[in-house]
Length: 222
Image (cartoon, rainbow, N blue to C red):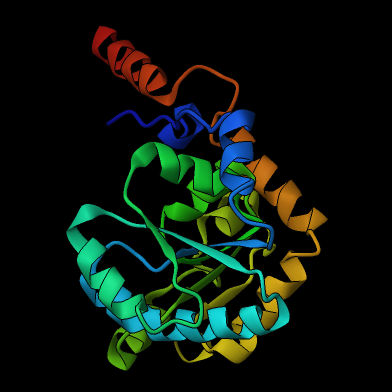
C-alpha cells in the first residue's frame, strides 16, 4: 500500500564547471587529459591502482604529453599518493570539490571504478571506461545473483551498452588501454547514451529533491 514515484537523481541538479574554469585547467598542459577514478575506499583503491597504473603507462607510451588527474576524497588521499607514486605519469591528486568538478568537465576521457561516479561523468559529458576488480568469491557470488549483464549505471539507465566495462579477470591493462584510446577519437554512441541518461534522470526539470518532497506531501494528503 505504499506509494512509489520516480523522482530522478540529484546529479542532474549539481553545478557544472564553467567554460572559463575548464579552459584554465586545460591550458596547464598540452597533451590529452586522462581522468582516473580508482574508487573512494582503501580496499578498492589498493586493488585497482596497479591495474590503472599499467593503463597509464600504455597510454603514456602513445601520448608522451599525457596528463593524469585523480580526484579523490580526504580519507584515502594519503593511500592514493602512496599507491600511485610509481606510476609512469605522476597523477595530480585533487581533493578540492570545485577543482574536481572542473576536472570532470576538462578531461578527454576517464577510467573509473564502477559506481555512481559514472553518472557524474555523464553529467559533465566525459567519455568513460569502467573497470573493477574484486575477490574471486565476491565476483562469483555477484554473477550468480545478478539480473543484468552490466554494472554501469549509464548503460542501465540508457538501456545501451555504450560504456565499455572490464570487470573481474577482464580488468587488465591490455584490454582497458585500447578502449580508452578509442574513446580519445570520440564516441557518438556514448555521447548519446550519456545525454539520454541525464534526460531520464530529470535534467532540465524540477530538482529531484523538490519532486521527492511533492511526492511525499501528495501521499500524506491522500
